[in-house]
Image (cartoon, rainbow, N blue to C red; front, side, top):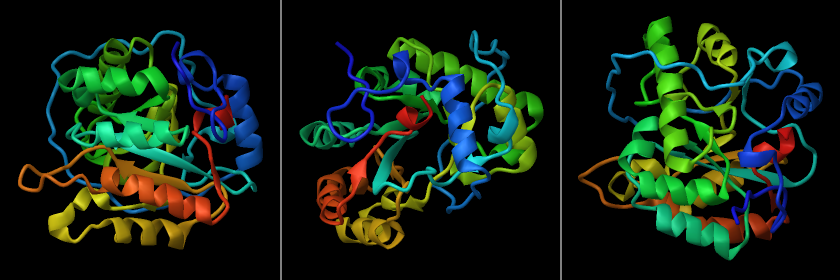
Length: 275
């Protein structure tokens, strides 16, 4: 049976397939108000093109009302809970370690996956999708403000279809902008495709790799400095350079969990808060 990780430990939550409901989204909007976008840019990935413009996901209404125009950098909660999120856009080299650490502690998490990752690493994508909500992270990880409207729509829809083929269901209606690169027009277009935009409170920058000085200690230090109720932690499941085989985030994760536990925090995925 598929387990969708939710609030706290060993508690299922979220709508079927790990996706939030529209009623839940409105509840989030009422609680959140206007949460300012924040954070730093992420790592570089390849950029490709699709010649076809595939159809949008079936039955996904546009995001309207207070949720529209937002790129959520923190969850609107007062409880001492954090959301662990993992971007899947390059290699799957750290997937085994990430899933093992989450499973060992029965923790919820949310993954943001590119369409290319889903197609190139379908087995890893399926393993992730069996247990956790998976959001859209574009097809090829381009900078959205540099694309045309049609190119942005193509990135969203092609990724949606690729992820669905890999994990066996449509992705959760959550989107993370590649590199954190965004403007209001991009947000509006993503909302029109039915996605709520989710940023991060803190980027561990483990994606830089050991060769660039990223270590378990630097990962923990960055998160501890930004730790706050509702914090969204950005990590990555793999390496981003063929020259550096390290998977710093995956290696650091068990130790980061211990550090967060030591501050009296619990965990939540993004989906249960809006489901």
